Length: 339
Image (cartoon, rainbow, N blue to C red):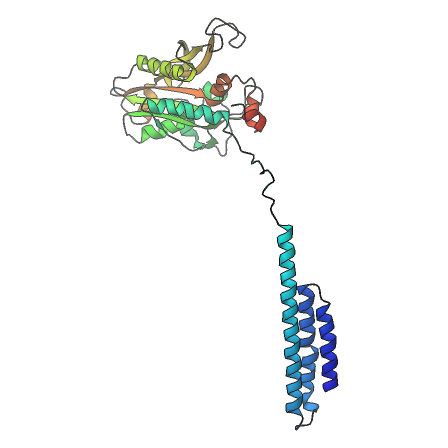
């Protein structure tokens, strides 16, 4: 038995010292000390040893086991130390090398334009209000004086989810929600994404952004509307900007108008940018239709107001002289860095 134990110890010691990984070391441990290991088999054969020899044989087996465990632990420590040193050598940092340059993003022209518009109107006492992009047909059309058979509804053909639920074509529905709350007076702008069934080209997209404004109070006149929008244009395009209002028709305002601003490229003398007219159309506006007020439970005999709407992309295109709307959606960092 002693010779057998010495042979096992010698063989295992050679295997351990030649082992080059902790995984292989663990395999050796299992093959010798595991449930089916060589030493375990020897202990199981103790029943064949004479009773008076069993204590002596058991002691030799335990001594051999202890010796093997000691050698295993020493080799494990040695291998782990070598692995740690190799890892530290491989991960060394050369502090003299130049740092890697982080690629930073850039604010989008739409975001820059929106923040400027919000700053202007907040400075005039307006509140910024947001609403759902998925809207009921009532708030998107009917509450704005656009019944089912109105031609304006055909012009704003949109994406319907059900017969009564759609992706909004304008942010005017946010104004209706605010009017229904009954908290008067109201001074608000409603920026947000809208959807229309348009073909993609240089000036159109099925998804774009609008900023609509609403004022409801007593004794509001068209002069208040003109003064507000004239100040907005001067703040946005420069102090020398002039405005012009042309009669127009919108179902939810009466009277209605479209507003032009003097071309900020040529100062109104005429150029390629304004097609020689000296003016650039910028937004639509008008006095809130009495029927729209009535549908939101506001007395049109007591309260009046005005509303306006401008395309955010149109402001960005004009302000930064971008000639193709599609450039705004391509997320090309080379393009965005210009602003």
